[in-house]
Image 1 (cartoon, rainbow over the protein chains, first blue to last red):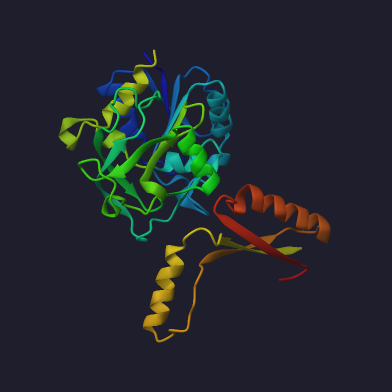
Image 2 (cartoon, rainbow over the protein chains, first blue to last red):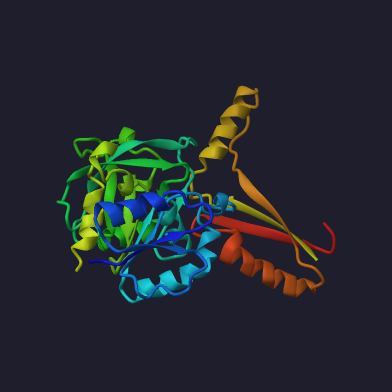
Length: 229
Length: 82
């Protein structure tokens, strides 16, 4: 069993989806945690869900990172416990410095909401260990600011440490310009920190975790997390 | 003391919004436009504080919140009245 917490910021809107998958589909003890909470030490994995925390004011994730709970999330990560940030959660993780780089406005300037394919680049992480290398997952995205950016030094560092966990590809797993939905640098869809216990990704695995939703590829990410124990 | 803060994307960061505006200006006949960068303008009322302290404070605000220095640069002006 893994004890999960799903953080709720004002404006989170994928919190219930994450809760549903963790609690009802995977049967794990899961609790919502309001962003004012400072005590999260009983949890093994913190989920920062998607949405529009604080209305995306100033920059996506910029205000949420100063929520009281984020100090606790920082400590949680320092202890080596797991953090997964999905979509807006990924944006919050980069704003808070828990993950390198930043997420910019989509190159098309359009909000993009559709299924995409991502290729697993590395299975050596608590978030991808139940997938296989180069496996292509079909998972939806829904964002206006998902274009991953990092400067040259940061990108080199990400590659050197195998921190790029998923990239946007076509259904065959090929990197093509058309399969990059938002203009992300090198089609990067998700990265982890150097210690590999913090993961951020733009696609929504919680929206692809039940057959009724069209894909169950996303559940592999959550099942990977369970494999930890 | 009041501050005017300007935040723009770094030159090394693509600005698709600026590009879109540039294209629209070209469509209006302004073909001479070489580039457009879209940024943010923020006014901060600092209350009664001396200028050097105000500068210090605004700089910290920019570094911590108003700009994301991974992708953005900032500059500011501080005046008694804006």
